[in-house]
Length: 219
Image (tube, rainbow, N blue to C red; front, side):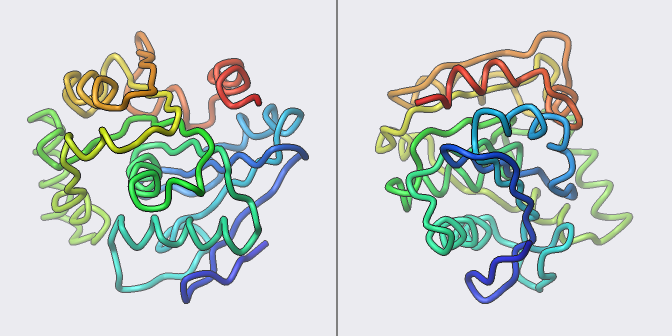
């Protein structure tokens, strides 16, 4: 299905019935990373898996900005009358979710932030060099996006009262203090570390988070 929002078309798939739960993928991915998880979650929620702009089957543009991507999701929620919705965002999707919580908190009921960062400096040195090298080789604007954005100040998070579940991998591409600092700054949050996992191994084509999501997002 497609939704016309914010001047573009967002492609999405809906599964199940109940309270709305949006799943937002990471950089260079599409909604299918959630196929296994959404197949389980559909028994508990109305699950909306969305291709971000410039990804999957959604509109391709020259605008690569987390702020704009977050606005796309805000208008998606408005268009489909889903507010307040649960949102689980991974990596870029988590950044967009956090920006939504800062600018349109009325749209979010609860949020899970998986592998989120506030600034490019949050990358581990090795991961930052990898992204730089990939951009030099490919000139892909999606790599440039990660090198220049987001730009969220830690003290801004104190404004957010939305219940939040922060999930990080033990071997993430971001520094471990990134996640502990975010969890400490968000007044209504809990932090979960995925032992033995890398940045995306616990979420991409994996349903391991199903019981945690049901526990957290259930009314």
